[in-house]
Image (cartoon, rainbow over all chains, first blue to last red; front, side, top):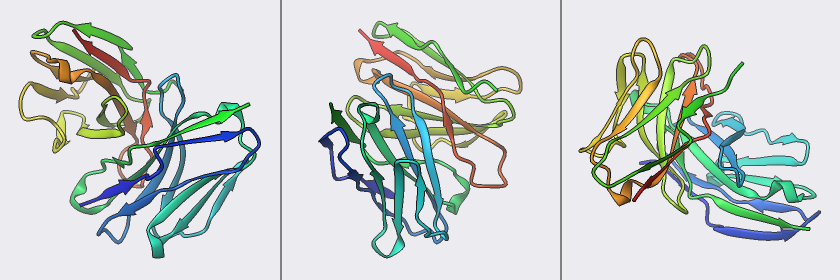
Length: 116
Length: 115
């Protein structure tokens, strides 16, 4: 079975602080994909990143960075110098490759509040 | 290039009525997925469809729920005889044809309220 755990239910920081959102996953697939989505208060889901299981290179995009470690089955997301506009619920998701389905398995999300 | 479109954005139904949720995938996308988000919860997969085919419906409740993606027109998620517990946000996502690990692009969701 596949599972994604986001242990942090809510995080509150002050603007300009760095914040890391944790994501731990479980899968028996040898090839899989990991995703992060952002859900702002308006409710839509915004795709942030996809990472393949065979590519452990960390990625940076502006103030966002992702740390993928297969050894600990983690795919953590760091926001540097947080801003109020970063306030949202962030979801980590996993997609396996066995069985033909392409469904995403989501964690329960981490609600990030950035205070001015 | 228009994104995934869902309508209606908000839907209110009384218990026992039917709810029909529509999803138009992005242009060029032939795979559609439906997810349900209960209050304060993450998204849960319901069904995965390609044109005229249901590929994976392992997340669909056994009764009252059905989905289709006809050759022409949008994908429809249909809930018959709605109950209060069906109140949730229903998201549709689409992806390009297989051949790569295409990310799923989500629509804005339909928020169903059952009174």
